[in-house]
Image (cartoon, rainbow, N blue to C red; front, side, top):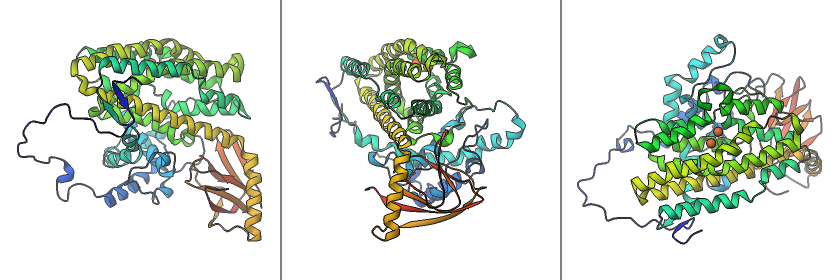
Length: 494
Ligand SMILES: [Fe+2]
Ligand SMILES: [Fe+2]
């Protein structure tokens, strides 16, 4: 870190100038209008109403084929969550964060156009419902509460202090890039050392699909309006991502090819049920700062960092893909970004960030640096979450053995844990979840599948058990006519 600008210490920024003498101050915010704005209990009700919209219901299948409007939120669990308070970082991968991020992506993406590949007529009702004013207005009312719930922790995590200059921002960014370019990328190391590298690699491709299949859509929000030549420079980055109007060259099309050669589906959000909340958080963050244009300077900071770092990330992922799948995998998406994002990183800094500082003054720097820092916090959370999910999937057999041992202790009375009992049948609807505490699943009768990923299922027969660790995404599906199973709350120690 250079000595002229600092991030991270919780010291307030000194005001640049003394404020002008105050005239009579009026509060023009809607929250100041008596009886007009929603109280927290009203917002809770509106969130439940939003989650109860039929398009957001649990689904009949784990994969959602060619219907981009079906986006389960887990209506059942939502009633138990308190969205009125910001989460702190330690809860950023928890159950309410997952639900909030699912809702936020649904809300943001009503600005994007999604159409199914085939049979539109059969999906017309869902299309109309997703883009209806009811859906959009309800989403808008609950959006600020959900955003505060999942993003406000970043305000505590990062404080940008001190005296910054353009030169200081430049050397700060260069040092970030230099450090990143020396890293091996923990994600790739985790995949290569996984018990099943192909499964782990496909899991990463699924997480990336959340953003890459609509690549740069959030960013297009920043090229609307009128703000001088910086706007046109920004536009160049976006049109590169859009392949200059040549569909086979559009970056999202390149990613579809990668998915296909990994044996994955490339329809938008087919793997919705398997997105980790940290992957949703990354997609949502670009919308969060690009949709609310008071966050414009955060947005350009975040994009400058993302573009600058993506080149090395793509280089490493491309090598990893070849190591895992050999020659058959199409890595062109990553190879193209290795090349173009080194260029985009420079463009974003030299033609967007630097002229923005020159034109609008050093007072915009703290927001720009905040965007750079926030994106890095969310990226490292996403890495941590993904790596934890890979180890969880690798450890399934050990977690069954641990479950068996603990269940035996419960039966003999040496361990006591609160439990809930469920009876379900094969026709149950499906939704993936995370819990804030470790859970012990025990099947009393019938057969239950614990679904850990799109291609990994652990089947539990009568008397079998398994631990599911806190914050690990999984679903349950009864595969016998009926099953009775218990779920014990284990807390966080084992
Ligand atoms: Fe791109
Ligand atoms: Fe790019």
